[in-house]
Structures are given as structure tokens and as C-alpha cells.
Image (cartoon, rainbow, N blue to C red; front, side):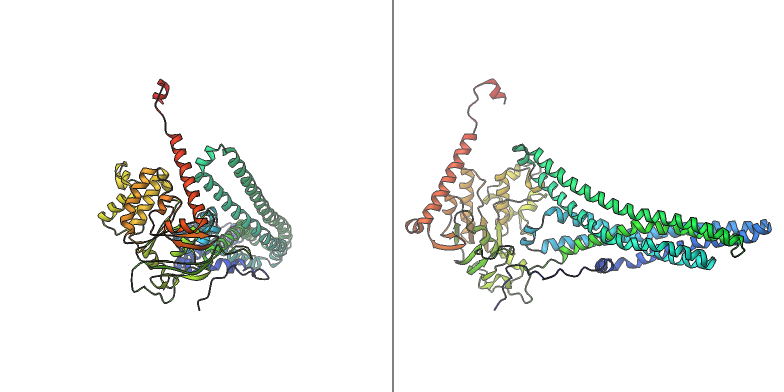
Length: 621
């Protein structure tokens, strides 16, 4: 027996243990592995440069205690030459570090972005129903940009600077263990505050990135809905909502800045206090002869070299915690469970007849409250090969949801859907969707040419097939566009009218030449004359194709061989239009509602039709 999908996601009694920052970031290793040799080489070059910088104070110590103390000008020039050479080597290592690490970071970002997009395409519609698009966009763009900058800059400098500090302290102890001990003792408060900083900053960094995603969602919704906002004069309302979210994000960013300012206070204050104490101690040691003047100069020169690595720890740690949050957000999507997957042993139907059967089908969303009836609640329905079935019912009866189950946009939570005798879950998704094509009421087009939009489901179709699909959908207007069928229709096809978009979406479904055609109210945006012409063309297609059509117009019902009446998630009656009229009171109610809606729509169109111009102003207008 097939295991059914759980009706809700199980919740643990306690939240999962949070990974450490190092282990969380280490999850990107599979993506970063090809670039690791160059990143390691860059870190090596940076480390060599840092060690070279630490050698300069040793040259200064030899200079002060030797040639300067003895007045030997010949030795002075050798020391100056050595310092110059070490400086050139340090600069070369810095250039080499940048050359090694800059390109690999972009490759890693591109690989992660491609994987993220592929995952979005693979995840089911139920996932996209739950996730705001702005959150997904912010993860794909700004979060992955953070990962790239950290790999190219943050991790290299963090590792190199920590190693440099360790080597530098070894030099300090070699010069004067007393002064070096002062440095160690004074740095203890700094390390304590660093641990406090991690817990505080990680929380606010996550909040900031989540709020950025919410803000991106608001912007996207406002841009897509700009016509509605303008039509209802709600621009100020949308601006107020955006301003409120932006202020919340601003407050979070200020909290981040305060956290960073706090650690910077310690990073600047501690070294200055340490320098003052070390200077006092160094003068006393030099006065007693425990430390040479050259050793004192070298100690403070080494401490000056270490100042930048110590001060950089603050922003490198904040960058690391930002990156950890970005990685967490990336893997929240990548780790999302996908219940709609291909079977391990896929089955291909022996026949391609187009017989579609729903057997005791149940469906409910995962977040549906307990005790609420299933949205699709035990549907039994059979479509014979070549048959056209109209699906009618009042709003909310489950018609659109039922059609989505045929192509596995959602998986049933009970029962099964059979195509030519094979459970659709036992077929690969590509195989299933090559046999079942859908046309949606909400006609979505892409920023591509008319040809590419129509042939989306069958890019290898011939020119004759393309022309036939255009003709059936009454979309001949495409030939009069500026570039004909190669015209780019713009984002979501908004450069076209609603009826034009719907006709192209219908042409797309027809061009796929499926065994089963599922149409969700495909003619809602068409005028009466165009609808009649499209219906005539559809009759030719539907004569050889099994079709399930969600009907919201009596004329669409007339296309069907049989009609299925859906009520409260169930199929309560199936028959011809005349049979259902004769025996089903609820069907008569539904049909009368459809007729009333159609009459109201026609009246609205008539009222918007301009009459004859009676004045010069109207003629001009």
C-alpha cells in the first residue's frame, strides 16, 4: 500500500540544536570545493605578506642596536635596502592574494545561485504558496553576495589575521616576555566581549536579513499591483505600509550598528591602553638594561604591525556572522522537503489514450486546521479517451484544486489519480507533464517572444503546429505586432490585453499536443464573438483529446460531452447537460448563476461601449 503524504508537518518537542558558526558555514563546502585551491593559495600569499611585515621590526632592531649605535653608515644602507625589499615583497603578496581569491568567489556565488534556482524550479507549488517571493529573491541575491564577499575577503583575512596575531605574539615574547604578558592580560576582556558579541549580533543580523526579504516582497507586490493601487487611489496607503517596514528595518540596522560600535570601542580602547602600559614598562626595562633600545623599538614596531589584524577582527567577525545567517537562509530553501518527486522505478503507460481516472481522491493543504474537511473530499470521476468533461460548481467547491492534481502540481493526500491505468505518482514528472497540459484562468506570460511563450511546452514544434495553435486560440493578432511572432511581450505579458494574454495561454496549451488537456476557465476574458470563434476551434482539438474544463460560462459547458457537478469537494452528479438540468436542483442553481454572471458581464461591456460622438469635443476625444 502506498504511503500517503502527512496532512501536517510534524513539530518536534524542542527546537533542533543550533549548529556552531563554523559548522553552519562549512555546509557550503560542496559548492566551494573547486575553488578551495585558489582560496588557500590566496591565504598563503597573504600570510607570507604578514610574516614579511613582521620581519621589518626585526631589521629595525638590528639597525638601532648595530649601525646606529656604532655610527656605521655602511650598515645603515644595508638595513634600508632590506626594509625596502621586504616592503616590495609584502606589496606583491597583497596583489597576489587579491588575484587568487577574487575570481573563485564569483564562481562559487554563481554555482550556489544556479543550484538555488534549480531547487526553486523543482519544489512543488505548495512551497511557493507559502513563501513570499521577496524572501526568495533576497536569498538569491543579497545573501549569496554576502557569501561571495566572505569567501573572497572575510575568511582569508580572518584566518591570516588570527595566525598573524599568534606569530606576532611569539615575536613579542621573544623580544620581552614581560611586555608581551601585559599584552596578553589586557586582551582578555577583548576575547570575552567577542563571545558576547556573537550571540547578540547573530540574532540581530538574522532579523535584519529577514526584514530585508519582507521589504523586497512589499516592493514587488506594489510594482506588480501598481495598476490596482493607482486605480483605487491607494498609493499613499501602500507608501505608509512600506515606510513602516522600512523604519523597522532601519531600527534593526541601527541595533546592528550599535553592536558593531560596541566591539569597535573595545578593539580601539584595549590596544591604546595596552600601548600606554607597555610604553611605561618598556622605558623602565630599557632604563635598567633588561631591554635594549633596539629591542624596545622592535617591540613597538611589531605591536604597530599587529594593530590592524587586531582591529580588523571586529568587522571580520560581523561579516562572518552575517555570512552564517546568509548560509542558514540559503539552506532553509535547499533543505525544504519536496513531496512531489519522481519515483525510483518510474512506469510509462503502455497506451497513450488519455483515460483520466480519479479514485476516491482526497486533498488538503498541509497547514489546514485539524477537523476541517478535506478540500477535495473523496472524488470519483472517470474521463474516457477523447471525452470532454466540463467541471462546474459554485465558488470554493474545489474545482481548480482538482484540476491541479492531474498534473501533480499538488499530490493527493488520499486516493489516487490514474492516467491510462498508471498512478500519476508512478510516472516521472516530465513524462506526466508531456501527456497532460494545463491552461490557467490567470494567463501568465514570460518576458520572451510570442513564439517562445506559445511553444513553452513543446519547443520542437513545427511552424505548422505553431500556426494551428494560434488559429485555434484566435490569436491572429500576434502577426500584426511590431516584430510579429518574435515580438517580446514584456513582463508577464502586461503589454497585451487580458483577452490577448488568455488566448496566447490557450494557444500554449493547445500547441503542447497533450493526451489530456486541463483548462481552468480558459475563456473568461474573451468577448462573445471571440469566445464563439475559439470554441469552434477547440471543438476540432477536443475531438481527439481528453479534456477536463472548469466552466464558468454556459457556453463553455456546451463544449462538453458530459458535465461533472462538484459540491463541497465531492462530485455529486455526472451526466449530459440536459440530464443534469432535468434531475439536479443544485445543477440548475449553478447554471442559472453562470447565466446571471454572463448577462451582467455583457451588460457591463455594453455600457462601456462608446456611443456616437455628438460634440466636437467628443469627436476629438
